[in-house]
Image (cartoon, rainbow, N blue to C red; front, side, top):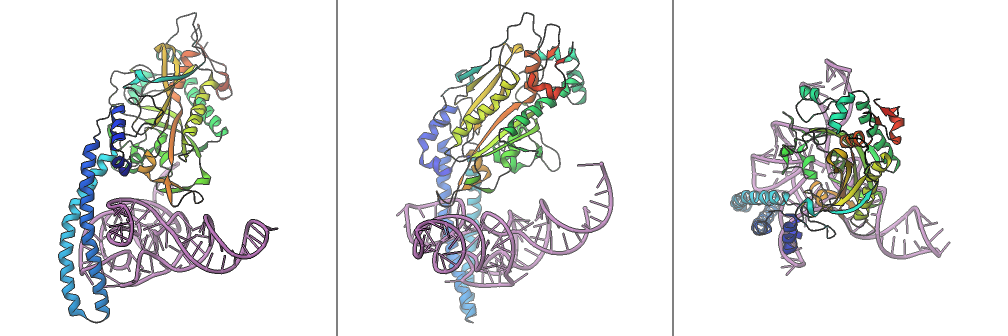
Length: 425
RNA sequence: GGAGGGGUGGCAGAGUGGUUGAAUGCACCGGUCUUGAAAACCGGCAAGCCGUAAGGCUUCGAGGGUUCGAAUCCCUCCCCCUCCGCCA
């Protein structure tokens, strides 16, 4: 959520930001509604002040035993109250409208973000590793996995529906091994591990920005109306919702493994094969809470921590900075890490690391105090990044580490977890 | 799910209809004292909103109700604790 006052005071800058993002969000509609809201507030508050004043006077009269005088005043208060009730109803509606509108505004891009319309305008930052040249025809993971008996797409459809995955034997173990390698690595580098609920309520989903705008992307339960989390970012960030943190405790570095659930409503026809785009996938997530002064440095650090996982596995990757038009709703700046996928003959997203600035903190009311530096409390900056998407990582291992005989060489870092050096053969 | 108890400022914890937006303690900030620190003492210290400001409004789990006036009384819901039931 943007700061209403900021929008009011920097209308032109916000207009430009929305333009850069390709967002249709209307600054002028907001300004108009906001002005109406403030006008109504001023009006009702005058009456409320009058009521409070009269009530106080009544109290004093009653104490002095002058109830006839008080009775006359009571009549006036009743009148004032009627007026207040009428105006309050109006104000409540306008207030809700303004908030709803503000909730649908995307975050303002950081000045360092390249301007651009879509993914074609993203800027490559760096590359690591060399895509392997095969001296045989490499198989895609959706072919090799089933032929090795470690992935079963058909029966996953029987159990649930399309875009679900069933893994077997060393495939299942590979998934678990990757999760453990990631968690062990991140915790060794100072991230605190959590094990959160994977169903969350509407307030939680609103805090990180999935609601109200992106409800269609989520699975929702009946009855209680809880949502299956689309990423651990949702729960990790909301751990501190409605809290005031101490500056001396910042930055906080959190990590968690969770399954993630996505409707993929708008993704018909995209990445239909394999385990690239599925309704349920595993992810190890990184989340940080930082002061405004350090959040951009923390983003760089998170990018290193996430991409280091691919270096551990020996998988080639590149890092890109998303342009203004390609960034997610709540992000002020985003780096994507893309792993080399032979079946795509290209790099495929495996992590997204974002600094959300105070956008989520304002929604979720996550603040910090620093008595030595300023009075009161301020919003923290929240960051999140995949470290990494496990399913896509498994797919990348299968494809990048395959051999001519259809076996897979287990990356060295995973061997202690796998208990073997080769899958198949 | 049933019975009982409870949800108050960063934390702990008073407060049952009228200057109580809220005692007190801790934490924090400023000062005195001290070579420095601690202790002691003095002072300050909730948040949000409207307003150039003065100031005003709102907020004591959430929502509704009673009243001229509600942290305080009534209703509904949520959450926490204890006991019972159920259960992995």
